Amino acid sequence: MRKICFLILCILFLIPFITVNAENNLTTNETTTTSEVTTTKENTTTNSDTSNESTCTGEECTDASKNSEEKENDGILTDGKSAILIEGSTGEVLYEKNAHDRYAPASMTKIMSMILIMEEIEKGNLKWNDTLVASTNAASMGGSQIFLQANEKMSVKDLFKAVAIGSANDATIVFAEKIAGTEDKFVEKMNKKAKELGLKDTNFKNAVGLDEANHYSSAYDMALMAQELVKHEKIFEYTTIYEDYLRQDTDNKFWLVNTNKLIKTYEGADGLKTGYTKEAGYCLTATAKKDSMRIIGVIMGAETSKSRNEQMTNLLDFGFNSYKMQVEVEKGEVVSRKKLNKAQDEVIEITPINDASVLIKTGEDEKNLNYEMKLDKIKLPIKKGDKIGVLKLKEGNKVLNETALTVNKTIKKANILELYKRSIKTILSGNI
Image (cartoon, rainbow, N blue to C red; front, side, top):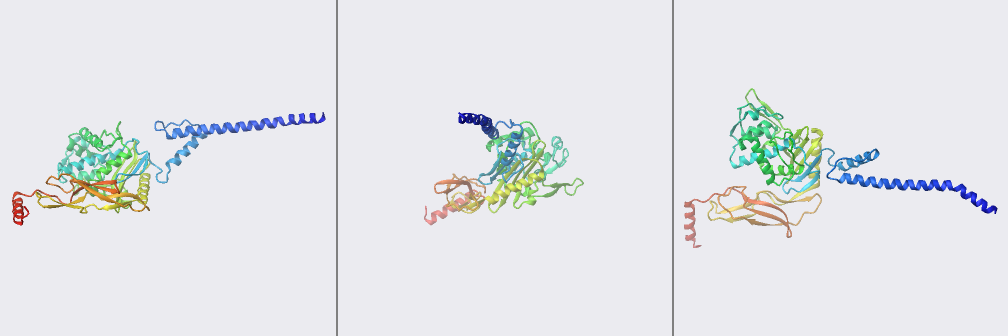
């Protein structure tokens, strides 16, 4: 009996401790469950494309912020709303961050304006020594400018310097009005060209990049525009100028200083366009070339111009350190010869317009490449640079890259006398 009573007393004594332990275990399990639910919510919010709002409170917000910062700080970029890095000839993406998000592009808009200007020059509709006249509308433009006066005359060459070096709004409008009649009509051409280039996240409302509703682009689209612009190699004669003067030998001499400081501080940098507005922040589309590799980088929405340049330096360094080009056929190298009986030069030499090359990672073995060519039906005359076919670069049967083929010099039609001489020569040689 005594043993039974002693056992009952022991049980009564231990009940409080058992209860406390059970409550502690229950609390631990609930905390774990709550933590799991919160984590799931944060991942959903982080990965969502449709919401930037946070539903967290207290310490959860702090944790979410840390996670976000860790994600953005990838060791390459620490500033900017969006960015991209592509290889210039293939367009292959080497790095991207929110590259398809739409933002105000500021004066990087002028990349498209310069594409249209260069096309007009190459068509012969504008010549570098032509003189254009500034309208009252052009002279009234604010923002970056060279302070054109209404009816002031300036050469195409100097106006283009103003756009490419100094990002001049007034000079851009002079070109827009010359090419299309009005800025609005020029903007229509800009948007048409954007569609031709396959740009899905770009819409222009003006030619210079001033903040305006529904005027936007993306880092990816800006990179494609830059890729198109650098096809016009004459552009580099202007985008590589760090400083110059307009209105030399006048009382209104104007000092131009390139807004893209990287052309002075980064080896191989040769363009392309900066931008800043309150809405856009500090933006830059830059390009640099080392050896046979050109890369194009875009940063949108950096906090300061210094940060923008530092971030772009990091981006370009990453590209050149991580990748290289394997060149199979160099630009201008003769890959074939073809006889054209009606050409002034009976035998034409065919070359690639650009290097036929592929991108490989640094440290990787080079690929075993071969190529094949397909020529179009050739019509005379042919200008150097005209596409007459395509060279396909292959690894086995897999096509890795393509480049257009052209002639190594302009080929004219042979005149009647030359054709007559050839006919006589053919008859006398017995080859007829």
